[in-house]
Amino acid sequence: MSRLPSGGGCRGDRHAHLTDLHLRTDMDKLTVISGCLFLAADIFAIASIANPDWISTGGSAGSLTVGLIRQCQTIHGRERTCAPPQLPPEWITALLFIVLGIVSLTVTCGLLVMSRWRREAARLARWIAFAAMVLFCTAALIFPMGFYVKEVGGQPYKLPNNTAVGSSYVLFVLSIFFTIVGLLFAGKAQCIPVVNTRRRNALP
Image (cartoon, rainbow, N blue to C red):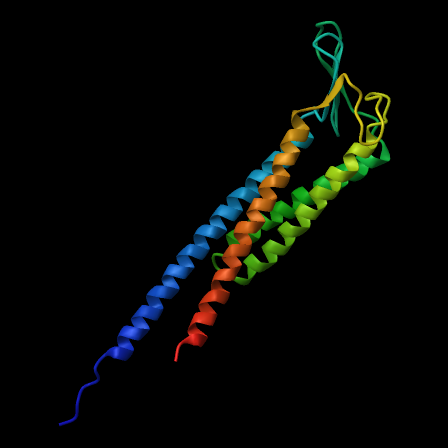
C-alpha cells in the first residue's frame, strides 16, 4: 500500500500564510499611524497659515501680530483690526513652500488610503511626504530672513527684544515634527515586505 503524505508541506504552507497575514497586519497598522501623523501635520500647517500669529510684538496695549496672510493690531484695548500684510519676498517664498507642502501632504494622505487596495501607492506616498518635509524645512529656514520688515523691526534671523515668535510658528514647527515622525513609520512599513522576502529566500 502506498503511504499518504505526512502533511508537513501543508503545515509549512499554513505557517507561511499566517506569517504573511501577521506581517500584512503590522504593515497596515504602521500605514495607519503614518497616515494619522501626516494628517495632523497637514492640519497644523493649514492652521499656522490661517492664524495671523507668526510674530507677536508688544503687550496687550498696542500689540501687533503678524501672519503670512493677515496681520492684526490691537490699540490700547480697542477692537482688534486685521488687514492683509505687505509681505517681503522671503515670506512670499516661505508661504509658497508651505502651501506646496500642504498640497503634498494632502496627496500623501490620499495615496495612503489608496494603498489599502494598491500597495505600490504607499511607496509613492512616502516620496511625496519626503518632498513635503523638504518644502517645510526650507520654508522654516527662509522665514527668519524676513525679520527686517518695519512691522517687526529686526534683522535677518534676529528678532528685537520686545518681539517673539507666535503660536502660528509653533504650529508650523509641530507640522514639521509630525511629518518627520510620519516618514519614520512609513519607512518602517515599507521595510516589512523586504524582510519577509528575505526570510522566504533563506528557507530551504
